[in-house]
Amino acid sequence: MYNRENIDPRGKKNGHLVGTPQHKDVQKSLRADAVQKFSCWMYDAGMAFNVVKYDSLGPTIEVIARHGCGMKPLSCTYRFFFGVNISNAVHTTINLIRIIELRHNQTQKNKMLN
Image 1: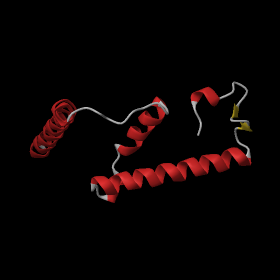
Image 2: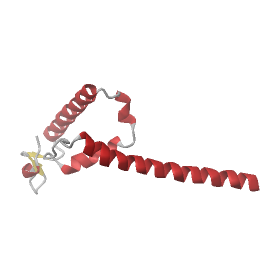
Image 3: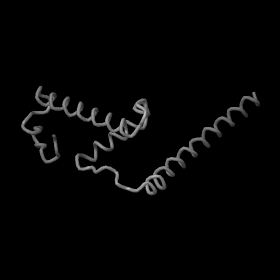
Image 4: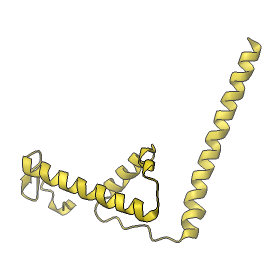
């Protein structure tokens, strides 16, 4: 597995030049392992597999990847997670709904004026 310590400033990772067939094979293997682990986690959590189509999944995985290998799983309590993170998501969603309603109302007014 690649760690930040294993990256050589000359473009080598664990002795394989980036872009070589060996490096590509290692990348394929890492990706297959990640997909398998993610699928098992979704199954264990009872999540529907169609959630991978959500637009928010890509940015989430990118942020986790940017953090690197040292990222620990969430260990916060349900109260913290649902109290802070979910309430922030709810407030964002409510604000978006208000914006959509305002635009819809403005469109309706414009239609009535025409």
